Image 1 (tube, rainbow, N blue to C red):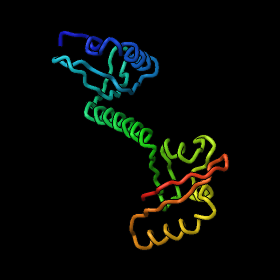
Image 2 (image 1 turned 120 degrees about the vertical axis):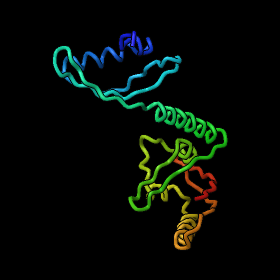
Image 3 (image 1 turned 45 degrees about the vertical axis):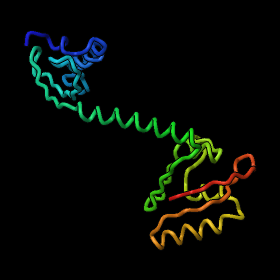
Image 4 (image 1 turned 180 degrees about the vertical axis):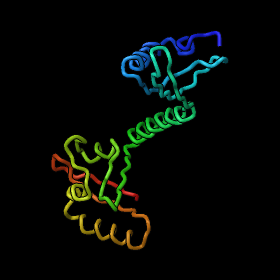
Length: 173
């Protein structure tokens, strides 16, 4: 190559690369993601693990993670589209991991239920406490039947919002 290593790094990433080099010089090792400009001008992303062997000798191991980075970028875009779609349609999604009891709500489910994500403990019990008292037994019975029969649940019921008002929701699971 007729270039210095820094010449292969996009200018906007020079400061980050300089920090990796500084860490390598001062601590004797450095690990990080570094973008490189290829001959055709495209940028590839690499994980670099480097160690200092002596004052002027270094050894590094690299792995091209461009494909992984591209997949991650596509996932971020897809998640944002999902958030936008749920917001526009006023629908949400949730996941219930029955073995651990963990329940996860999307941002829009918190909005539908009028709950603050920072202050509402998302558990099966707290969820059931939001169900209107007149609908709770029917909901629990339908859920248990669906679990026993290993089928989807499709139910409409009311929830009680923090201000005491009721809202109808339709759940598919």
